[in-house]
Amino acid sequence: MAIKLPIYMDYHATTPTDPRVLEAMLPYFTQHFGNAASRNHPFGWEAEEAVEKARKQIADLIGANAKEIVFTSGATESDNLAIKGVAEMYREKGNHIITAVTEHKAIIDTCKRLEKDGYRVTYLPVQKDGRISLDELKAAISDKTILITIMAANNEIGVIQPIAEIGAIAKEKGILFHTDAVQMVGKVPFDVNALKVDMASISAHKMYGPKGVGALYVRRRNPRVLLSPIIDGGGHERGMRSGTLNVTGIVGFGKAAELCKQEMAVESERLRGLRDYLNDKLHKRLDEIYINGSMEHRLPHNLNISFAYVEGESLLMGINDVAVSSGSACTSASLEPSYVLKALGAGDDLAHSSIRFGLGRWSTKEEVDYVADKLTSVVTKLRDMSPLYELAKEGVDLSTMVWQTEGH
Amino acid sequence: MAYSDKVIDHYENPRNVGSLPKDDVNVGTGLVGAPECGDVMKLQVKVNPATGVIDDAKFKTFGCGSAIASSSLATEWLKGKTVDEALAIKNTDIVNELSLPPVKIHCSVLAEDAIKAAISDYKKKQTAEGKTAEKVAQPTA
Image 1: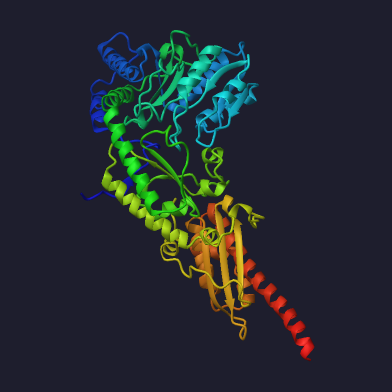
Image 2: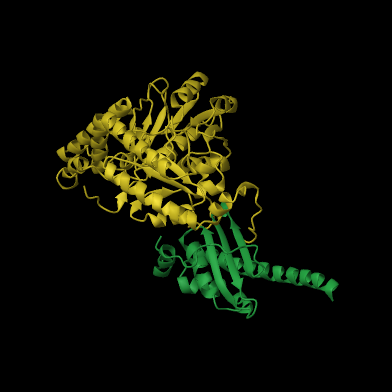
């Protein structure tokens, strides 16, 4: 089978909209274009009905009640709403928030802003496998703690946090628990009740829906979570998120959720097979390659590997017909490599040498073969060109070398 | 990001990749940068003792495409130059030749540093060699 280049293997960044999703959306642009908030005519009723159907489809995917789904513009907004909304609403109860160093920037930067407003934030470290320590979590809790926000699965390394255990701890202590579940929902089972989650951020475009629409699951019972809105206006979404609903996007989101629910079991196993095949193939052909994060607690479609002695950006340049991401950020002014990989305790050199592979609905074995072959030849070529590989082969311990870094 | 055609050409067909014997008295070696910064360059020159001209130059680089291209270009330029001419190569020359964007200027700076470090190593060896030669020469005089 001929493969089409370039190959997309960056499904953690975004996913293409499934054609079945697009088909469901199309009538809502031109035909059923009503405003879901128009209560006095059929155009509005149609739109509202479509929105409520989608709300149910999304709720069903995560074991929630439809009334617990608040639509937003995407997971960044959902994260902001959860954290800022709880912080403001529960200010009298306490001012302490617990999160982790490997969270998405939408969480970290929101927490940093709250710190400027007098909140105290604990950023839990992660262990070598990328997971937080439950003991450290327990130790960080104080009587001022109002929120724990820990992501379900990491966007770079795909590592799944012990969400159910965190949920149990939070429940026992009477602290609200929010999770950024963007990478996990729709890919592997995620049930808000089984996991004891009080709030969860999800995004349509990470699960074969359109961009620009997301949701925040907000628990209504046991406990009932109250949020101060961050956007004021017409009082849509039970006052938690004003603004005319993105009906087309929401319809697509709902359809995408329905498809994920139907196909998840088969799809995740197929992708796990492909991911393991890619991993095995690379390990058989290349020495000194290292998997970042736990393989046991990991999304089935994620692989994140450091190719020692080869810099990430040059590696991407060599596989420019394959769309993947690198933990190296040589293009940014700071030259800072991935903070997630650094948090695992990987040296900066290995962080600079990493590639994230994200497989998805349309990934094929032929594509994986192509990527593995191409990577093998590019890594080999770049290592022949790498002074670090040469030094290492001469037996020099690179970690003890003194580098001339002045001025860089 | 978009690379210039020249950067891509150097990346795909790097000139003078390899190593020269670093213990050779006529070889100067510069190793600059650091793995945690994402760039390490090793640049070596071999100087003809009779003419003072750089006969050969080799590099190995751990770094992005622009870093590889900068060092590859540097080795091309070094060949045939005298040691003093080599020291006149400026990072801005490399920036202009490769059309490097502002975020990649550090790659050219590193290449200039590598040239200077290699020449400095060569000169140090020559001085040391001179001293040793004098010492060795004395008893027989």
